[in-house]
Image (cartoon, rainbow, N blue to C red):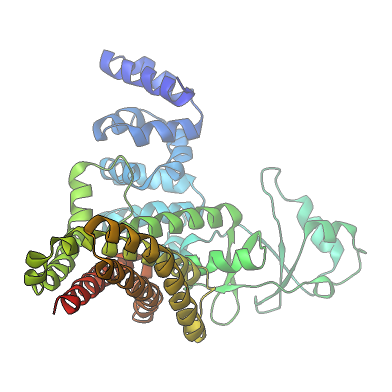
Length: 442
């Protein structure tokens, strides 16, 4: 039994026993990650049972670590006074994240009771998935005209629990001019001006999407990313832990969207939420499947006359779909990381068409031999091989085009690419196989 299973068993036992006093003591004794794990795996009522008795300090430590669904359940159960107390104990960026999850009708009421309401209202104007939505206001900045000794004095005032990777250098108007490291400040001549030591740093604007921010941090190996307004004034910084969270969130989102989920869904979502999330895309999938069925319906006479065509239909369509998914995965990742540009379209198309021909030929030769020995028709074996080659080429072609087109019209390529690609490979695969079979029967 793992440690997590052991503590889960203990909590479940105390809940069933109704020993709320011991439950509170036991839960409070756990580390924050263990508390978050337990809450994620408990039912809605059990989540509230273990969370509600905690003190404000414990709730404040735990809130930022909760999964989205558990946080939603807990926020609904907390009154405005308690939410404002928790927000007051959080860093401004974490308080904004918390209040952004509060229902619209009582958000103003909660913000009005928070000490830093002006800052929070300003940050709430930005989307939660933007640079400003994930930045923190805890950073150290110094005027570039100050000397090193002044910066050293400022560093001495820093509390032990605070850690600054960079000290940002500003001009007289608060515009970002660069950065210096604490080590450089401590080892430079005291009389030297900070603007002489400043190094360039890549910054992002407040409204930039968080995924693009994470890509910039990765490309330039940044431990922090400064956020500026349109005039270059420093607004805040995005720390490495937030960047890691963004990367995990975006990767999860892309994987689940490719699987046809409308929202990010955890394994422990209630059935009704999963139903609502999944059903719309299943309906879209149904429509595309009917389109493929329509193509098959046009060749009923071929299927009736030669049942071998029906046997190999799922082979041709399935292999094309798999090949297309390989291309699609590379394209979605390339677009997400900024590796793929529209100027690369021609090069990418020719590459994937070539790969599609080679993989289609390799798979087609083997499958055509199987079809020949199975059905005893060398001509039908050739038809199956040709259909596979054509469908692999189509899979590579549309595996490039579909995500690019969706990205161009402002739709997340991860969200719907797989559904459209599956339709293309099914329709084209059925048409190629049945059409070629009909041609050899004439």
